[in-house]
Length: 372
Image (cartoon, rainbow, N blue to C red; front, side, top):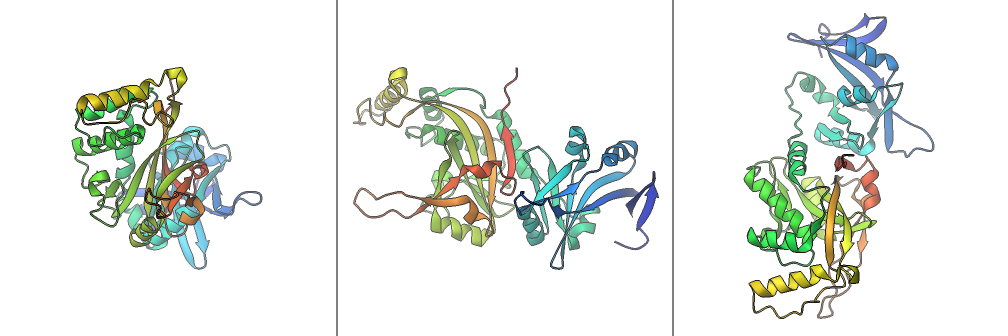
């Protein structure tokens, strides 16, 4: 920033940084990003938001006011634009705005990084050499992927009990190849995601590659994010489970090191298992329907009854971002046992779901709130 268009100035008795670009004037309310102190985790940082920030922002709407964090580490400088709208909605009350080490790492590595924390606050992390271009809008910060997931979630049947037979029939009638699979809740998620991507022509940003890709490339995950050049995987998981199965360990590690990041997109659901109390309705109806559609199907009507889900109710989703630095803190080894021929399966990862409450790993969330 040039000396002539970036100055310290006193406004309403407060010393602020005033930056002018063209006809636009920014007021930067800057604070150092610091560690909260014991007993908080070392990866959690913050700036303090004084009460006067709120009055100042509301009184000076003619300026573009930014709540700015400044982080220094070993000669590196990263700026954090705590986008003020959600903080002002909550009220400041001399509270803190939080940022995490992984966020700072992403910003330093890629020049810019954006996320939404679990309170709905939006953050943009910018490396020092990109900051002027960011304010001048020469770097476009786009949350297109988050916006696409918001749109997908708006049309997804959150908060509704989905019965196995209804879902299986819908997938079959819409020519989804995996309609007869026993783990129908996960395949339904993939079916709906693929349909959304196709109908909304999102292929330039993200597309479903799923089962169509298996065996054809080294990375047989569900989602390819084209413009940003990385992969992701969809997971439907029982909300009561502490872990959810991940992917082949070596394949996932290779993918992270090649593309620098990876997204696990996890949709959690409440679950009613098929049992005596449901008269094994889901198990029987599924097997009967498959037999009706395919007379060569030989399994009896109680096949898979011990693990069959009767119905599910999707209630929340999270996007977990993995990179070279953090993946070891999230993933554990999943014991797959052996193949039918007795040979060992390639080791897979488990995803420890306690990270879904941790903003050092989660970059986007959605939770269904039932109206009273």
